[in-house]
Image 1 (cartoon, rainbow, N blue to C red):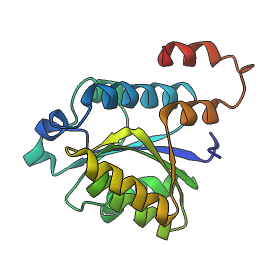
Image 2: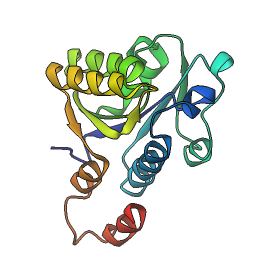
Image 3: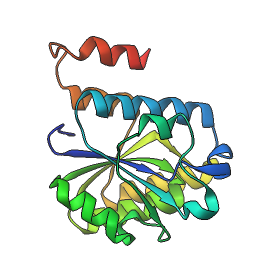
Length: 179
């Protein structure tokens, strides 16, 4: 189960024209925003990446504004773990769980999940907050990540697992994100 004090949200490569080509982009974008806002509300750290931003462009809006102040690492490796600055930022947090959101499911998200699992990190892939251009690629990647040991969960499962209790004073605010 996700634990707020053990989790980090990894926001992976939502940038440029590639983001515009994602399957079910509107659903993706809505869930990405929910995950960011919930992490901020519950004080779960966020670390972000941009795949070769000098070629693909920066993180797209509204996410760039929502993530102001969040460490965003440029990378050329497909796995976030292949970028030393990312690994330093992630390890400095001292967390044992990673929630993965972003694009593309079958490339950067997949490779990051596998590398984190191999490093002993518990991985939660937020299935409706990741995407690929081709839906079959996403489906195959989700299955491969599950087979490797990642937990595949929807956005609302992640949000309520982090919150844990309707008595939490932030419950009403979180509900506004969901509706």
